[in-house]
Image (cartoon, rainbow, N blue to C red):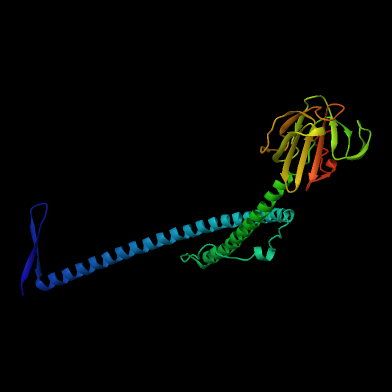
Length: 300
């Protein structure tokens, strides 16, 4: 068996030796290796444990952050639902106004489509909260789509209604005072009893005459006892006639809007003084203009 001597030199120059044999050296090496291995293992496992604890803390903070966000989303969804139901109530009013049947409330509550189900969560509680919000958002998306479709229908009907209303003769054609109304009367010149088909409105010469509704000028001509005359086709069976004009500012085929200046009052034709003869016709038959006047537009 081999032997070794481990020498130590002191600070005073003395030399001391410790005799070692092969067996002692072997066990010493084994002991040191075991110690280093155990130290290394403990260090690595400690670092892993610390990393896991740090990750747990991070995930807990993340979970709390998600819950805070979910609470905010839940509040926003609640506000959105209330707003949508208010929109739905207004939509129902529009639908009824435009003669469209409102969407049934049970239909509004059905859920279709929406967000895909999330798969990665840090807790069952978080998973349950998110799924509940997903179902709630599904219903909101469905409600939005139904309200959108209903509003589109109502908007179309209201557009048609607005167009029709814009073409109904509903304002006074000029300012002045009425000298003759609609119905039977004695003609101021001939003295004969005849049916007067419109309203005579008197004022100073060249008083502005306006179109009483949207339409297209169908005729501009000098016409016997009517003198200078304009006729406007408003569609939907409505037409209007403006007679005894001094000036005409439109031409045949021209589009006009309600309230647009089309002529100046005069005394052309068979008259006793300056005035406008105004007629409203429905399907070619003269009707009482008073039935269509907006009495709040002008006061005489």
